[in-house]
Image 1 (cartoon, rainbow, N blue to C red):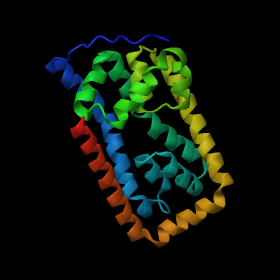
Image 2: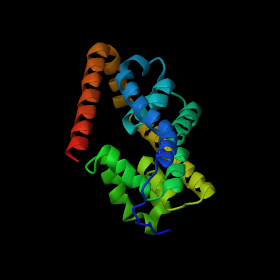
Image 3: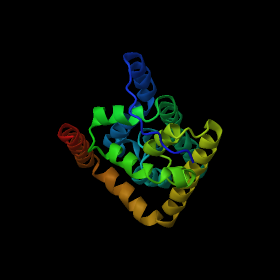
Image 4: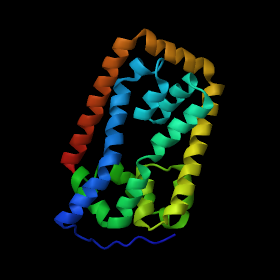
Length: 216
């Protein structure tokens, strides 16, 4: 696996505009996850596939898997999880290590995203393929681009990891069908309080993120 170039390349205004253009889609999906979190109680029973198209975190996928069949779950889940990854890979490919410097200036050095990148970066040159398969999320896709991982291998390994993750989640949902069903019924029964709780949680997450950024 390619070693990272640690040179601190500055971005000119044109590069910054291009970087922001590539970042629009991943950012939009990240914001959509908050919307899905708030709408959980409204969509879980009636539109689980729409819910997971907003929010594809593991807890949400588990709940949605309980409410759907395997094939639509895999199709929608794969499309949702993979959609931002090509943009992140291209972002890292075009701008290299300067991408990390720009994101650090935007989010602050203490943000969870920046710290995750720093932790994974140490291992990527040796086991990058395995990491991409196991956790093909935003940080890994960005690092794969920075490390100049070729597009076709990136897509193959990423999709293999994504589909494997979804198959595992669907299997877990069948094993714990009883508890998940009880959770779905609880959320439906207390829909309004649950929605208020999700709004409060989103506000708390957003506030903590801004606080870390300002401290950084």
